[in-house]
Image 1 (cartoon, rainbow, N blue to C red):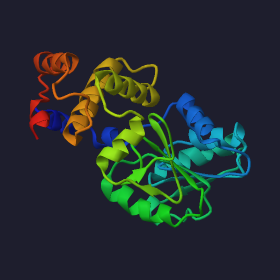
Image 2: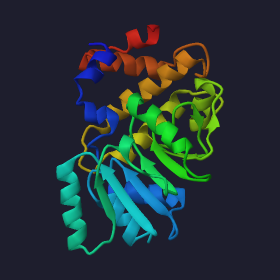
Image 3: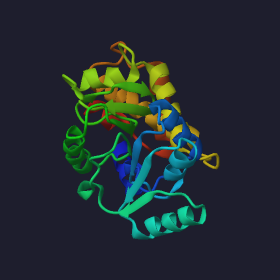
Amino acid sequence: MRIDEYLETLPGNVLSGEDVQLPEKSLRNIFKFVGLKKDDIFYHLGCGDEKGIEIAVKEFQVEKAVGIDNNFEKIENAKKNLEEKQIQAELRCQDVLDSDISDATVILFWFTDESITNQMLKKFEELKSDTKIITIWGPLPDCIPDKVDFPYIINKVPFTKAKNMQEQLLAVFGVKCVDFVTAWEFAERYTKAIGSPEIKNDRFLTIIQTLVIWINAKKLGVACGEEIPESIQTYIKLMKMNFDIDFEPMLKE
């Protein structure tokens, strides 16, 4: 099975971030990284449950917190939970593309669907100067991040446009070229950030992410050296032999 065929067998929400709830520890790390403070107006786009909003209000005491999600059941349940805890916040059942976010100073935005990210980029560009948009894994389309603590990325208005994908990739990883160690380190950071303690296959996910990072870097011309590292070759063979997942077609594209 080709790696792209394997990825297609996974639920779409796993790949897009939809319905994947960030652990509370990760939410706190994100808020500390972005410097969330009392005078901030915080928006969580695609909030799912109320945890991000609750932490922003209770622990970081933001001036205003707004959660937006198009899942009616989740929003109603989140409203109920916040009411029971007597936490003042605004929850909207809306499509993020239709939402008014004009007063935001900090936005948490975890979407990978290009049809959404490209449209939202236009909305973000209209926000007031110094508004921060936190993304996970990658920056906003064609943008150079303002600050990175991988997998968390701060994009700040007005955005700095990348000359090309190579410049954007190197800005995210903070290195001149991507080798196996860099790919593994960043894949592991991502897996730990989005995973819960109950996850048993985090090493499997880390291997897949490592190979995807390195191969993409190779295709963009920013991998270290011309040859495929022995470690990468070993994991490609392991995935083929043990799991029937073939990365070779991705290398040849």
